Picture 1: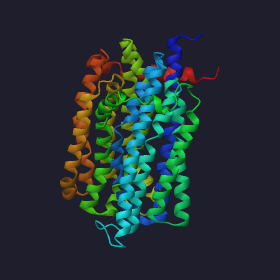
Picture 2 (picture 1 turned 180 degrees about the vertical axis):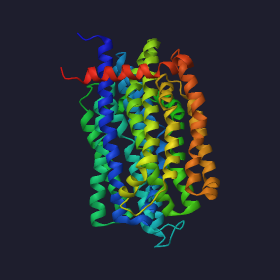
Picture 3 (picture 1 turned 180 degrees about the horizontal axis):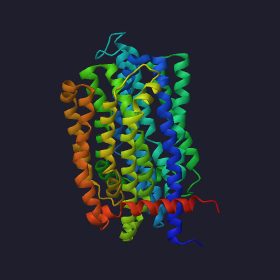
Length: 459
């Protein structure tokens, strides 16, 4: 019988393998979709698409992160053998998401009816094509709320890697539906409709792929418990700082750059940022893989092992950040030019500025996941959303003063807010000290590589 340590290591390696596959799939999708959109839409309309797709993405905040917090609660309940509570949490979560999505869809349909009643008049200076695209993208946001509770059933039985791997199907579904839509219609509305259809298909796949994972985890109206709702909402509100901060940085800045410089600048800004942020996919692979096991280590008080895992994760993300800067300073402009089919251009200096924000992020990203694993995320959440808000506020004046160089500089504000607190508090949670932490980065990284080689070696 395998020891608990070997079972934990095997789950960690399985999570890492699945994360590599899923993130690699997502990275390939990002690389492939941009020249595809540029080819069919052109730079101007592609810039409009980036702006339009950013507007409804704010609706993702309306689910109160119920999927994330319910996933933690359900997994804990199953782990302690309380399947009745787990099923109640699962049913209550789906009921709440259904209610929120129904309200949201009602609003979307109401807006659609209002638009149709204007008989072709423009609303808020948007074309009919752009307006309908926003409505369809809004609907796709509400549909996507259901996927995470479905895959939670896999996580609850120690098969989180299957749910992670399953998520790799979404970008390919989006690419396939988008390709068909652009080939036959080449409009923003058709592209938004393809997004909606792909989300519907993914939710169906997630439900079918997880329905037999645990026989006790299924939806039943009688299991919906009103007492679960305040707890889920309370914990969900705390998690909202993270998607809110992401919305500020990812979508908010696109809107600001559009207001300051126009759609073509948005196309350059968004594409350059996407290219340099491919490095963050690797960071997410590492840190999402350690998250479940770090919770276990901290929960049972195995601080020495927690320190080793934390140090290895930080060393890995730092290496990724340094590699991002080297990439931007060497072949970055050539890759950008080739990637965008020679329709957009970017300077080496601008790419380096973007990569500096990746380097800054690598200094706190792994430590930030320690806060999540320990379920003590309130302090880092406040700084996350605060840093994102500062970056967004600085973006417009800096962009007006120095153009896209100023816009890229504004992203560094979040890193200055996050690094001191995220690292210091993570060291306290793991019982580590700064001198020992710094001295142990390289040894921990070597140990992590050796363990990975051992577990991946064919038996």
